[in-house]
Length: 328
Length: 256
Ligand SMILES: Nc1ncnc2c1ncn2[C@@H]1O[C@H](COP(=O)(O)OP(=O)(O)OP(=O)(O)O)[C@@H](O)[C@H]1O
Ligand SMILES: [Mg+2]
Picture 1 (cartoon, rainbow over the protein chains, first blue to last red):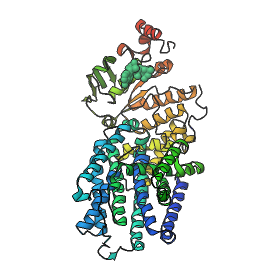
Picture 2 (picture 1 turned 45 degrees about the vertical axis):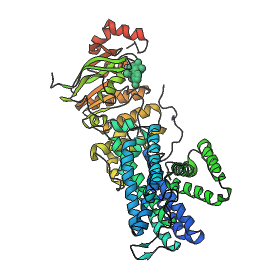
Picture 3 (picture 1 turned 135 degrees about the horizontal axis):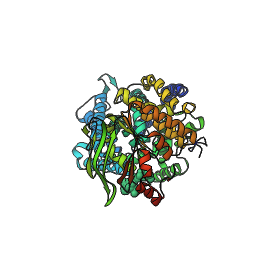
Picture 4 (picture 1 turned 180 degrees about the horizontal axis):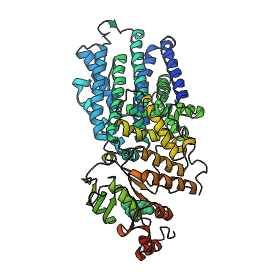
């Protein structure tokens, strides 16, 4: 047998960044910044803010699955619980919005630390089942503590308050800049994590955990860390969402929310930096424009999901990335 | 003897649901030697490696490495003690480039843990030169920019060896390092193994008996989980029990 024979794998998914790709990414970041500046003038600010919150949520989820190789089916727990905490403290403790968001995010992180530590003991489907089960416990907790969550009604009429006690956020076009800044900060952080020494090890563990261990990496510590980072950013998204919509409800902690974030990530492109943003735009836009279809939106989503898995595994950005042979 | 021995096992046993894959193995590897572990398919060689590197917990028996009982250690700690393995089924990081594959190992040796998620990966470029020279040593320089998943099987094996060497382990466990390689590559890797064995110990599973004959100082023959024979190549290859085990199983390569 000769080993100079052809290669045995087709063009693999490109996930590594060379200089050319780094330049492309920088240009994309500039394009995103420009789009963020223009967006509130060409679309409803509330719609754009909704897209940004869900895009951040999907980015956080993708960090865990796309770069850590860990499939969580319970990300609604961090998103939703952070949303409750942010709404509750803004409304009942009178916290300024930035403090409410910070506190919500911190609770998302803490929950991620506990749930992550429990879940990473298992692999693959068992890992996913544990995250789902823990998230369901959070849902039932939310249902059973109406004093905190408002039960079926949720926490309504959350005041947006004044940023740092100074800038009134009641106007959508003022709040928008805060949300845009949070989104951009989250995106940059995730980009950095993916392209850090830590991110390299995560990708290695994702690709081949036993091999990474045999090189001396304590894989479970890395997995826990990426889990906590992901939960923290999911919390940031949820906490921000509560301030934008002035509402935190059971929808945010329900398992369908965990499913939606999987859908956004798959549609946009799992394991691509920018895919989840595209996925969030597609899904949120669809929900908005097809809202008149009522329950049929769910059916349309289901069909998209199936099509994605069957025909379009790499997602929108994944397909583009493959075509130009550059990681996106 | 204790001073000369880098790794030893006593009564090492692994049972899978009543089936004994490794049966009371006493192994002793001399420091600085190339020690081959051979035997027909299913003899328990890979299971032995899994036990030595703690990827499997032994049912019974103990393992001493550098005078230290490692029977209860975790696999990542074994690597940190300088005992590093390769895998029978080639183990690379398929979505990472050839360069990054090797650099991941250098990163562990030079930086220890890498929990710094806030730092740019550019700090790792100081490792590139060393990674390149390891890649050169296994003849993979033309493939530097490919992802490991795009390499042919034999080249994946070569990459795995370069990655293992990047850790500068005191002792290497190589599970069939030349399987699936062409003649030219077998010679290159054999020469490389001889070269790197200068200041370290190698325990190697290999089916290619001519490689075993030319490289190893000592050979342990395993069959049905038990040590059948031990000695240098001349002694072992004449042992009637060894010949019988090889022909009987039809698994190994009875020629040399
Ligand atoms: N996880 C496991 N569960 C059950 N049986 C196992 C397991 N791993 C190995 N075995 C069995 O143990 C025996 C020894 O397997 P092992 O892989 O160690 O053989 P080997 O000497 O490496 O063979 P080869 O030359 O084919 O690589 C085989 O019969 C195998 O089926
Ligand atoms: Mg084997």
